[in-house]
Image (cartoon, rainbow, N blue to C red; front, side, top):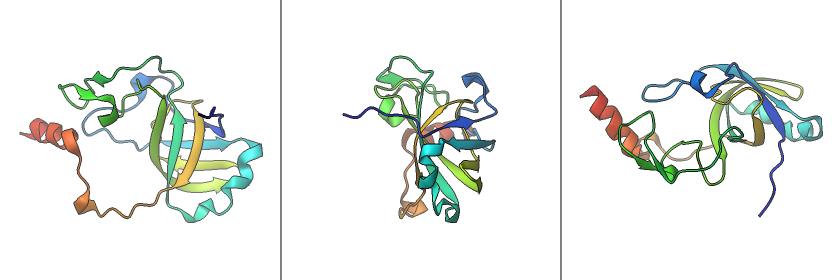
Length: 149
């Protein structure tokens, strides 16, 4: 096992979990800044060429875990590994953001769903070779259909 250490921190408009959009139809359109620590800034070389990034971060304000729970998107319980619940055995989160620009060691992004001051564990360019028609959305698609119906 390894011990994680932050490579930077998020500057976000969200100060509490209640402010982060959740549930069916939630849109993550807020801008934020990924502030990378100086000792990791060199690792940003050539990142500007990518439109979107995966950001791995820590649910640093979440405590404990639940193997099942009822998400805000549905009225039925689901397994933690079939959800985006912050109550996980390892409090690791993943978000896709749009890279707007780089300013030195700061990445200006759109689509943040993290709280201000959240620790960033890693950043990777978003690459997917899965065609949209092959993606399945599981229980979430079913919950959306029930809401519309």
